[in-house]
Each structure stands twice: as C-alpha cells, then as structure tokens.
Length: 289
Image 1 (cartoon, rainbow, N blue to C red):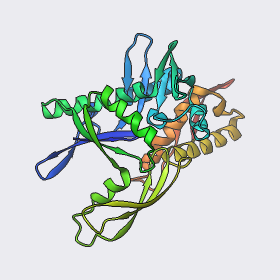
Image 2 (cartoon, rainbow, N blue to C red):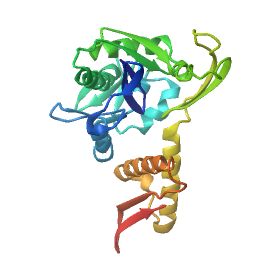
Image 3 (spheres, helix red, strand yellow):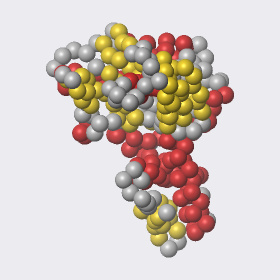
C-alpha cells in the first residue's frame, strides 16, 4: 500500500498482481483535497466536504496542513502561508506551529493524522484487511524535523511502520520499464505549494537523487492566486469593489479559479464565473472573466 501524502491533494494505491490500482476515495474520486475542517460539535470534515467549508467557514478550516509539519511558528518561510489562513495560529510547546480551533489548541501532527487515517481506512475497506504498513511519498527537500513529525502522524493514523520515498525518485521509478530510459534525468515537480527540479541518476536499479532545488513560493496554488487576482482586478475595474477584502468571496473566487485551471488540461480556454459575488444598488453582481 502506498499513499501520496501531498500538501494539496492526496491519493492512495495498491499493487494488484502486476498492476498498480488507485484507491477510490469518497465520491468516486482518485484524489482527496488536503483540507481539514473542525466543527463545534467535534466532528472533523475532510477532503471535498472540508474544501466547501473553506469558502463558508474559513475560521475552522485548514488547507494544506502538511506544509506545517516539523516547521517552527517563527520560520520566515512559513509566514506567507500562515498569513493566508483565517484560522488563528500560535507557537506550541517546542515552538512548532499549532492551530487555535474552537478555543482549543490543535497540533499540525493531529490535523494531518486525520487525513492519513482516512486514506488508511479507505485502504482497509478496499483490501478487506487491516493496514498497518505503507509507503509514503515526501518532498525531496524534507528535513529531519519534518520526517520526525511525519512519523508521529503515521503512528497517530494507525500505521505502526512505514517507508518513505521522495517524489523525484518515485517519478523516476515509474519510467524504469521503458527500454530507452536511463542515465541522468531531470524531474520537474510542479506541486500544489512548491516547484522542485531534481537531477536523478537512474542508471541502475538503485535510483539516486543527485541534486535538487526548490522554490517554496511557486506552485499550483500560486497559479490559482494569480488567476483569482486577475479576475478580481477585472471585477474591481468594472464595479469598484475589491473582492480580496471580502474573505468569503475571495475564498470562493480562489476555488473557482482552481477549477477553471483544471479545465485548461482539456480545453484551450475557459471562463472564471461566479454568480452573486457582490451586491450593488442595482442588485446582485456576477463575475465573469
């Protein structure tokens, strides 16, 4: 069993004979949004359900919590992400990032464990067997503190042991059966939260990452924000309303921009459209960009 524990999307897969099959997640999807939302009644919502709450109740909803694993609250690299949250944050006992949810402190480890446990339970349902061991993918830039935090997450999620493989090596291994594939290759990883380029030696069965460089400020979410900003600028010019100052509408716009970006995978062009995004004396205003 293997889980791609990505900071924007997660997925799971298992080996069935000679083939690898993706786990079907709730709703029949292959991928699970990495979003966690906490209800006042103690109920935890995950995935697509939590993603909807991000637009309506952002004060208790955390997107991409994996970004905070093993990171300190005062880390300069984390400040843009923390500033983007509507959830209050603070330093934990060891200076780590913690969230304030419904008057209680919730750790990054606990938050991430909810996601990984759901993936594990889906694997149990798919196999009909208890799942206590798995392979997890990690960013190639993961440091010791992040591995330590991931170990806590895995244990809390019911995995007594696990192996890790970095994303660059996993990508390289996926092409090993190609007879023309070998030597030194470059792997581009445009993830949801960062962009990484790795040089990987695949000359032998022992795949090795030779060098890597990463920009944590560029990723798929950066494209979402750029598209949303362009749409907000156009709307602002027409109606003199800045949607960035309206938290709920801005969250909705970012999600709509992300959906439009996905449509570009199969369409040459698309439209970012939202109905009733703001009110004016003449009535409700729609956005179309």
